[in-house]
Amino acid sequence: MTEIKIYGPDNRPAPMEKAKIIDFLYENLDKYGDPKPAIEKAVDYALKNIESFGGFVLTYNSEEKILGAVVVNKTGMKDYIPENILVYIATKREERGKGIGKELMKKTIEISSGNIKLHVEADNPAKFLYEKYGFTNKYLEMRLVK
Image 1 (cartoon, rainbow, N blue to C red):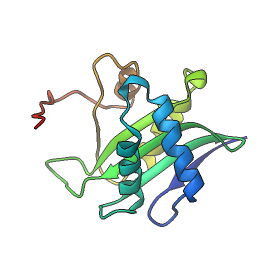
Image 2: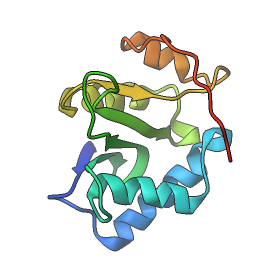
Image 3: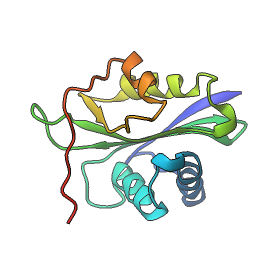
Image 4: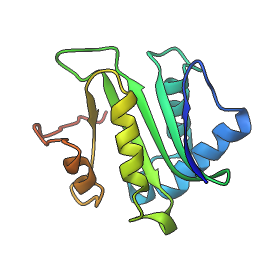
């Protein structure tokens, strides 16, 4: 049996479950991921474990095993920057191509209040999934790293 679990400031995962989510994302984001402390910070932001606007975390589970996960952070902004940023979405390597990413994307769009933005590398195969759900590439992102 599969299910999508929704976690947020009012429904935080137990500490062991939170650690499993972070480990899952770290292991399955591949070259598009971040170090564990950065992933944990995004999860803590979504769950309001730190001062933040909150957000949510989704997990796609089969028999209590995580097969996919999403982290969305609220930006606290509107009109000029979307209200939400999809920080992470990942599917277990062995389960890719089976529709888990689609289910997670549908649920993310359904429960998000306001617009959603995300960053995707040009060579990321998930780019096609995002475009399928209406995400467009309106801007070129530029960063100054100090």
